[in-house]
Figure 1 (cartoon, one colour):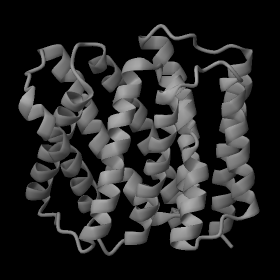
Figure 2 (figure 1 turned 180 degrees about the vertical axis):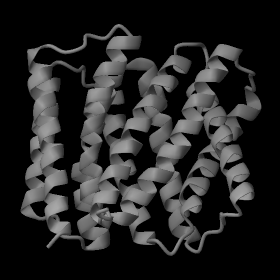
Figure 3 (figure 1 turned 30 degrees about the horizontal axis):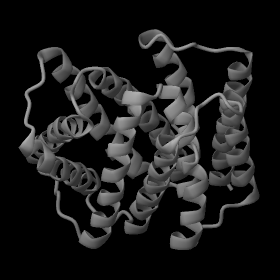
Length: 289
């Protein structure tokens, strides 16, 4: 049996993680359709995530200790701001609108990787990122999404997401893998516990089911994406976020009465999938040299 190279393992982990994120996002959007606020959503989802991590660590005797507290703090705060913006965006925009604006992340990852990690981007990765973004623009089309202050906030969130993920790779695999998820989830929980203390609510059972689903799936995905960043180049992992456009279209159509796919969306999605497959092919080819 052929053993997967670290690059290919990172690609597979990233694909699974980004797919899980879209499932969690759909659950967040369901929860956000009630009267619950974004910080109440964050409090419950991340609280459930922290609880799950602690239980898992106790059962498996895994460490939650960090050897890079300062860097973990920076990436956790970046994730916390990003998470708050995205939850709010899901309450006011469709999944696909939010995703499309968020797709500036691979470009920002390339920039941060170059400055922070001194990772070469390479012409093949630049080509794949560019083609993926062209596919997104075709789906978006000028004027298709209303560009307002929330749109700018989503772009800022994407930049913070990219920065946090680059810091994950900078920390490296000397850190216990659970610590990447634990400190991020715990920081978001503690930050949102402050406003929650002044406006505490207990959600109804249906809303809680969505919050629990989002919290558990997000926690799992965050661990996978951290591991993916440790296995392969940051630009490669960030590029694969484009696959979420397919899931975003599907979940929006199935659950939120969004228009599924016109001809331009089909063309854009085909380009996105093609660019992702090209990236996977290049990583596989590089791993066998």
